[in-house]
Length: 62
Image 1 (cartoon, one colour):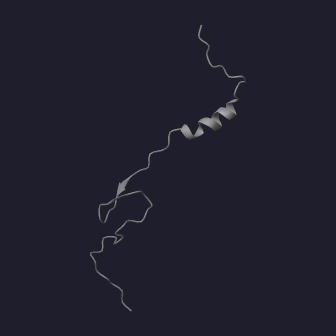
Image 2 (cartoon, rainbow, N blue to C red):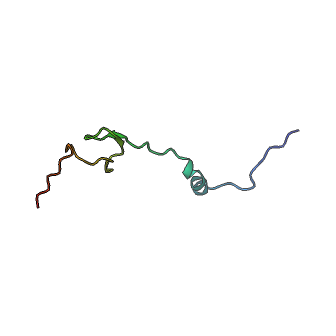
Image 3 (cartoon, rainbow, N blue to C red):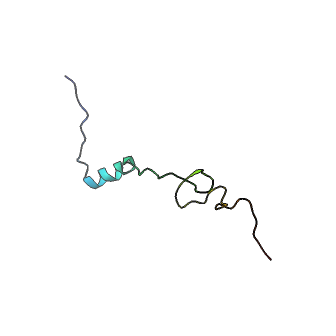
């Protein structure tokens, strides 16, 4: 005769949700390509080059 593990008390739904909350599926981040250099980045993040299509020209007039 095999004995099985049986919990002593019932676990409430609230406690069960607290324990299983971190196991839930996480949303997949959207990955886009930068319009100026084509690098892969997350939306609303500053690109590594950041030139915004300018071809290396410095148009600062002081």
